[in-house]
Image (cartoon, rainbow, N blue to C red; front, top):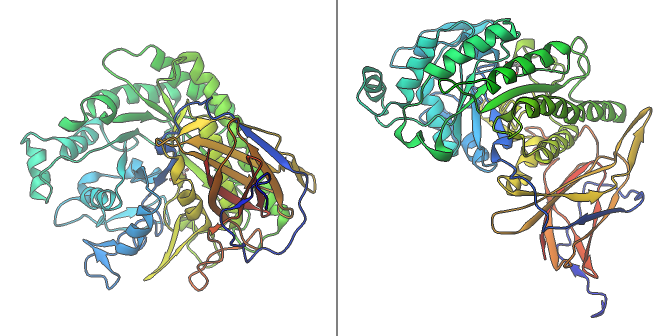
Length: 526
Ligand code: AHR
């Protein structure tokens, strides 16, 4: 080491589980941190918790009598884990469940026991209702995204629910809430006006939906005095498209056209979009014990998110050029075949290195569209689809996707900074993907953060970053494992966890050697 070639080894911990592999061509990234873009809204890191399988019951709610450590019936281990990823909002109670949910079944000392016909036809005890959800939100330090029932409910039912939750004045409903243990009004940050109303939410035509949305957004009022002005005001999210087919174009056009003509008496601030990564709905791929071919196929499919956002952003731009309405991708993630031996209606799947890469690629897509995409909710938070957390009775394990969300915390509400790079190509069979993806942002303290995904299943990526003023140092973490289908299990929970990464700074440039199939986040000191 000389004074001319100054080498700073910031952390010298090797990633033990990665066998030695060859590097392909060097990837050069350049950032001009003075050229910033939109704020990466923290709400794109939102979660989704539906009454589905063990998403709520066993995953969050174990009840006050449980031997599993809990606070007022809510699992302490799950709460502690979720605090670690700073969940900005939780969408609840569904999903398809929301359009059959009647809130009165879930309040008070005696709960009505109902059924959950969408998801396995099982008993819904309604033990987890409004107060339990709000308690959970409070315990994890998040915000409520409540989807109201417009499919089988009525405007009055939804309006009453909102009054029950948010009224501060002593109305009969507010007094009932106080009688059930919460005198202060709750905050509802986001209101979902139905769910997939073109399908499980009532098979509505776009025109019928618009007429319903006008009624619901008019009458389902948030009365919380703290939410009447500014950024605290509740956002109302209308149902949007669920794919690229013509019927969804028609749907988005109809809703956005109505928005353009909206009057003082109704309004929306968001349009939802649902897009799962699933290759064939009739013959879904396995979530574990797969090979590189399936890895490449799934990642190719997930990159279609970008085209879909472009498609619907163009429609939104036509009717809302000022981008007042946010695109909320409020259901996204991988959807694989149910694990053998599980109830197919419970949507139980494993979560592997492939899902970590998939999550990073999607979060980067959302961030690159930060001017329009200001909300997203991965499906679903616990035990369902691409989950953060898996539980089995008293056991809990954090998934590779959880760790990606943890690594991305610095990007919450950070300012997008464009990165220039040629990502190269990774080819497997007839599939070619960008080998490397990258995202940069500045946090509120002015610190620069860089994420780099090495999609290549086999080859290291040598990455070099340059900044106009040079780089002093960098430090961060990388997530990978030996196989594309490596997973964390209750018995081996640390197979896929972030490890510190070695970062070299030489001649003012940062060099990183990224393991195959890895997600890396570093902070850069200029
Ligand atoms: O996330 C599972 C289901 O997928 C949701 O209930 C529904 O909205 C979507 O079709």
